[in-house]
Length: 185
Image (cartoon, rainbow, N blue to C red; front, side, top):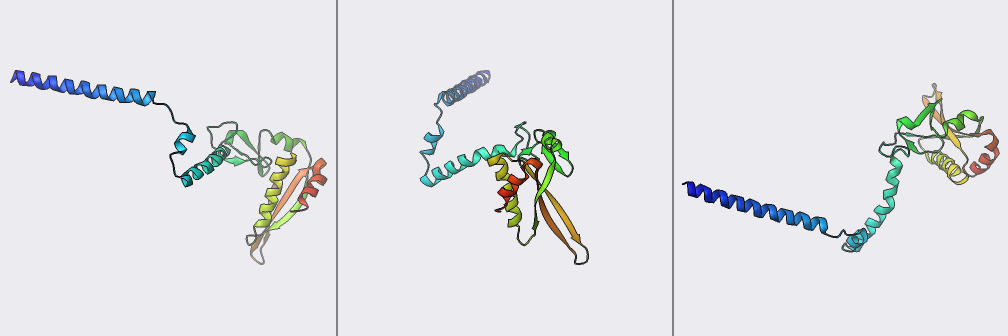
């Protein structure tokens, strides 16, 4: 009986050594295996899948826009009224009814701002409001002209509805240039 137990232990140990050796060999091969580049991997896929992978690569950099530019591990929670980028709570400051990033808050506080354009919007035709926001964004990105938009509400109690107005503000010195740029929206 003791001999049988000894033989079983010996066989079990031998099996464990074989299994461990095989695992070690597989791990070694996995580590030493040359890495496939994305293009090598993509070549193995159907052309439609390859096209979709190219589209995803174009979209991937946009994901970074969802995180705070100053703290890449923090999700963006609030948009700056000037630059329209998302920032974490630590990087955005409220001023009056809007929020501004640390870069643009001093700009808002140091300059006199003037109303440039007022547009009445409605839920039936939201495109007018979208055009105003798009034009504001283009002004900042293309011409480096800071503007911000406030939303004003007018409550009509008698007829039970609310009118919404988008009001665009610009630095006093830039008002004429901004008016010209917004004239065509």
